[in-house]
Image (cartoon, rainbow, N blue to C red; front, side, top):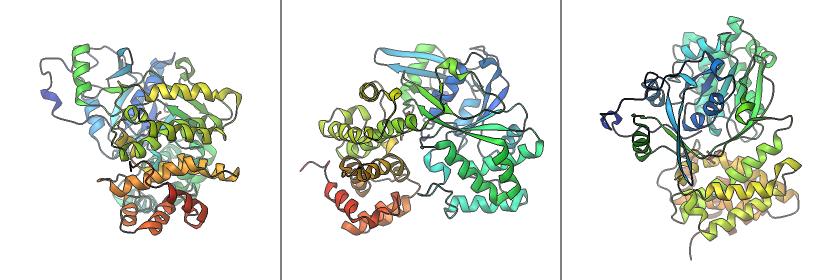
Length: 474
Ligand code: CS2
């Protein structure tokens, strides 16, 4: 997920009289490493690390967690021997808990260490939070081997370790490490995708296999036969940590923690798939294991994440900063409810309890003590809208309706990227280029980034064009 640990002002100067959080001031045994994680960010620490800590057999399951692009979060956590405070922020106050399940925090660029751990027989599970865009998938759900970062890693993998450089994308690194596992004979394991993508296990498998083929066809075949790709739906709102959060931990806990994580009380984890080398008893922590995950994935992806993206673009266009502020604006709230009405028509299953789910979302989004920044959610809009808006738009149109509420989310994005000072998106360059165009031409270019077929669908282009500007006060 995109949230990173706070890397702000010189933390060593904060409350220098307090001891630093460590395993000596908060004694905690180190569980053996049996889980390797890629994507050491705040969400991993509020979610999978929390679930592992609360499993009945947590003493047997330590996590080695690797960062993505930068080493900072691993360095900060290593200074605290992997420990950090999870601040659970409810309406009624904060609850502080030291999480001990991460026993090693490492720089993602250390592919040698990653390979060593994944090749170890004790390692049974690899979890991933590498962001939606991190899978390098094109609109057709297959590896986009023409994307520059992917193309470079494919070249490096094909050249083998003689290339001198290690792969730089998370999946390139994973493939190199899986090759080491094949070499060590340590046998099968499970890769658990924890990013907000529908069929995320299947997509992760496609991306990994696409990369592996470049390495050698034998490795791809070995992965097919030995690696189980587990699909999951993950949920816990985790805003970026601020300097004020560091101070809150220091005064409540009496130690210095330069890497706390703030989250909401709610959490959810639904999983589907096999764990050939075992797994923690995550069900003790409330995780559920199902045969058919799709309804749960879509409920979360469309209702929660879809509403988030809508609020991120519409809300910022209207001058809001946080989710709670945007939701309090009737224009945004009405747009969210309309989008939910469209999305829910395509969700079925008795267990989904959509009415309760929607009510709970309103309460979670409205938690004003969680300052969840819209700018954080707005990142990577092209990939997120492809997953959150386009499927609902298409399903509505297939049912003979317009899909206007889903189209409004897309229109809000096109308005937002027209004026936003900084665009953080894997397709930022193409978005910036589209901004040099005007009117219909610009819109068609942007729609093409979400789905190459959209610009040719005159009805959709017309619909979105008519909705641009809807969140601007006349
Ligand atoms: C958010 C998610 O940033 C985003 O795109 O929609 O990170 C969201 O907060 C989580 O999925 C909640 O579980």
